[in-house]
Image (cartoon, rainbow, N blue to C red; front, side):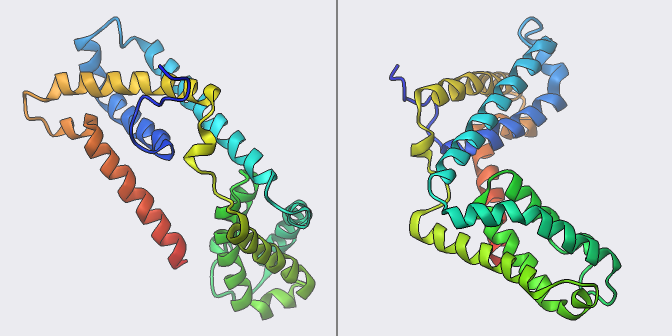
Length: 239
């Protein structure tokens, strides 16, 4: 097999969501699988499955970070370094501010922190947009607690530069960039037990007409993943 040949035909970005759905179905139906193949579905099956999933997650995060470090400007790096302190100061003022149009916990600070820490620069632009909208709608109560215009301006500048960088160079990682020999080995290691679950799930539930069959049918699970991803994308645009 070619070192860069994938064992599946769907997008790489769909592998992890598929693995999680299959894992949840297996946990629910574990007794049936153990009864079918007791030697194959010992407790270590799930340990190995989780280890393979974690390895893929780390590889994807690392590849994303490397690609994005190569595209973002030095000014964005500086703004990203300043962002945690800006968020901490904003959060302290939110705790004391009165008359906010949205609860402090719903203000949008945590999504910004998460996207920044995970190097999700495309997602960070979206979460910053929501945060900036809330800051704009609550300028007076925040200013009353000490929020400075220049602090808001720094957050705005980071958002503007992320959007510009994304437009100019693209901040999301394509499947092509993930196609390295080392990564493909990890994808194959994870997909092997996923395929076993799908094959054995069909053996368990196909003849009985059990509704669980759809949870082990690749076409059906892919449809679910794509619906969820489309919904997430639509929600982000509407925010």
